[in-house]
Image (cartoon, rainbow, N blue to C red):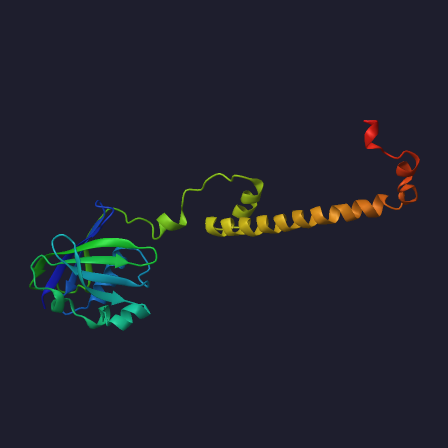
Amino acid sequence: MALYRFKVTFEDYDDVTREIDVKSNQSFEDLHRAIHQSTGYNSEFPSSFYISNDQWIKGEEITYLPNQRRIDRGVALMDKVKLSNRIDDPHQKFYYTFNFDRPFDFHVELLKIILDETPGTTYPAIIKSVGEAPKQFGNVFNPTVLPPASEDFDFLNEMEFTPEEAEEGFSEILDTEDEVEVDDVHEAPEEEEDEFGNEFSDNEGFEDEEHPQHGDDY
């Protein structure tokens, strides 16, 4: 059985590479899992290979754990497609995106075709590993933390709100405070009247009766 030796490189981390041997009759899902065996990632996330040209322009898609849109489009599934059915170039290239929600992109290139298997080897087999793969989702779960702008924000931060949730929370808090302030303004005169109105009610109009005002005096 012939073997395909692929070179796998992170698109954004050129110094991290892997070389993986896969049997020609194995599937794209086998290659998908082998890549993440070599990186230490959990492979159970929606991902796709794209048949590509020398400029890494995406062509036909072959997917894993597809969403409904891909199902409706009839995108081929990794476990249904053998590698040999999509390789017609001695340096065939595949653009590979792992986990569409928080993606890592890879360049996968066929280095050579090996005619004989190595006895006792289980395939896919990781032949070469250079560089340490970046932490899975590290660029999402370890963002730069900005200092809190106020005590309110610090409270929200301690409660593990995301920045978006914090912003929504501030809007709700500010709206509530505005309503309270408006209510206080309307209620204030009533409170003052209740507190002082009865005390001076007997003197209402006293000044007007004793000292009437005449505009001519001025």
